[in-house]
Image (cartoon, rainbow, N blue to C red; front, side):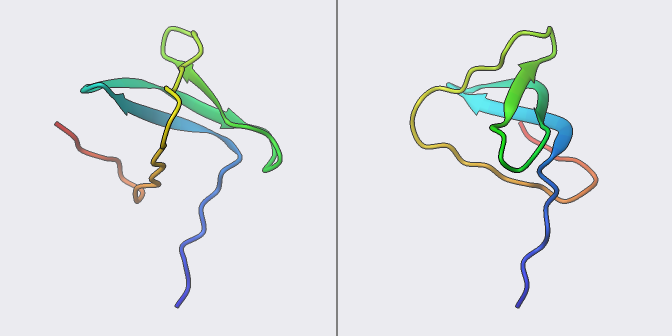
Length: 66
């Protein structure tokens, strides 16, 4: 069994769900040794609350949420 490969350098869309709300923006990092930076659509840093974080890489084609 093999796992799907995920490209985690460059940039792409990010959705941060917290306290019943969603914040949209962009994730970015230049190399696999860098931390991710999360930027809101207005250019501000997207802050993630301390605690457990769940990261999911959905299939190509987008996501749907309510």
